[in-house]
Length: 605
Image (cartoon, rainbow, N blue to C red; front, side):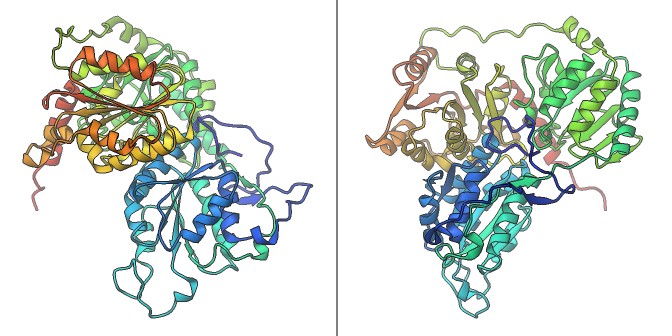
């Protein structure tokens, strides 16, 4: 099975003895032992869907109940291997499924018709942008209402049930409306297998009167999927490798840069193998942080144009050849389109395509195959890394705080750095946490996630819930700004219900700091909350929760000592009070460049 499901590291390839039909097809495994016959009372659509979710590695489903999905929820709850987690709103349920999928390889959420579906839509769009297979299940209208002229509640008052479906068509790779038991088995299985094959969300609407009805097609345990791996065109692969090796072997100081699509291509290990074989200086784009080991001997940091890790941009942009594996060049990752890169020096490797400088392009080539084959043809060249070592100067440390001096953000992250280990994972919210967390050095085994392509503020609350639920053995450290937190704060209560033990650093600087640095105005100032008081109210003496409000380094040290000591089994919420103008220098630079890109005048007509 080429797609690894139910695993912590979705980048790592697996070996399996599953049969592989023709490329791009989906089949089932033909075992010598027939699947177990199911009791007729359990051979229902709802239980089949539940068993399928468990089978692909999902043990937790995030949901918000509504009258159209209640019977379906009954059947999901009845599945022994499935845990139903009720969220405070659909948006957070979708974000939680996103966070879960980043860790397990696939996630799922269940909402109700239209009012729930359109609420979760934003989260599904974000999962689509990040190439995450999230199965979005919607409880739909009674099957008898299709084709009638009836107006239902939870709609906009028209006898048209397709509004929700049309909205999902642009952010999912497959949509199915199940309102007939005869083809329900086929539609459910096609939706789930397509999500796994394409690594994109799917939409699955199930009529509210169908989940409890037995049907012969559900009378046996579902046979596990066999997802045939995509195969590279052998001749194209050989030609692409030959052209790339010739291009790189002629270069004097080539470099490698990893991009976010390494994850969907499952090529992280292959990329590292190429780095080992080539000896090139190794960098990552900001949205690929966590996909490439930062303890690699030739790792030089994050390449992010003018806000790169110190000395990284100088090495990358002065190279005479660079190979980008799985890049996304958007206005944010290019710092307002200001990267000093030249197309004629670049090899761009996408999940199924290779483009070499201004020359040839090769399609139908899997990134993993290309990188592994190239590693065998490349000549070792450490020139770029040696140049980096010559110019490198170790970074300094924040100025020592005076006693009871107001806490600075750079001091905060100096202490967060000390918390990181193989038993932790970092979730960085959209905003200045992007830049501050980017500077954290990740030890072996430390997880790291953020949502750069879509950049939806508030994502991290639901994502923290989902990620922590997916890997309870890791302690999630979430860095969230106050403005983002106000969007999705409710589901900290769900973390408490689930007994999670994450550490949330709420950075209270009085507003939308990232927006301030792009374009300031009174709309970037928000009403201050008593954040610790809010969490204490959610806690309400149920579950394990501990809160602290810190104003200076001494209080921060004490809070972290408590969070990692006597309160280590609690959800720890630490509100950090900082000055409204205390931002990273990278945000100041990035904000001015993005502002310039946003304010370009119209081209002459």
